[in-house]
Image (cartoon, rainbow, N blue to C red; front, side):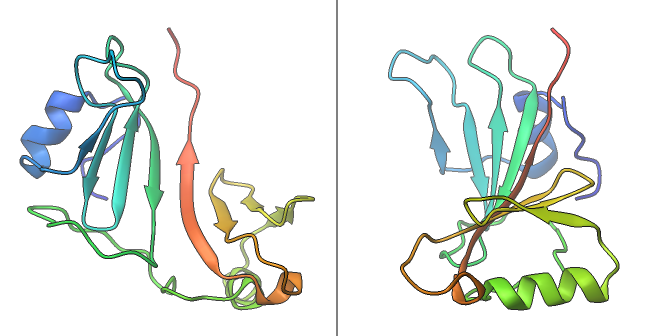
Length: 138
């Protein structure tokens, strides 16, 4: 996503992408939103007081919010993608990753792939979200 870096402020992100009606708060007492959603992308901010971006999640299986000015690429990722399809694509792309005990795929670059928790074999689990969160200095 061009021009969007971790630690960008909520105000700068809104100036870049435009207003969105899809806003959320982590706590009822929060004065400002800590989550902004554009299309299938959610942007997470540290807190109401510390309004720096520290997380981005893409949800390929949900209905998109109005996108405004956002333009992004997530290439081969699509809705209803099975665990085995994701690992095959990562292998084809020569992307190093590990699989956790809870069937989360973690790439060495810090991108996580989360899957719906079903009682099907691991290779058939369906992709739920893709995201990355970073630690920002205080």
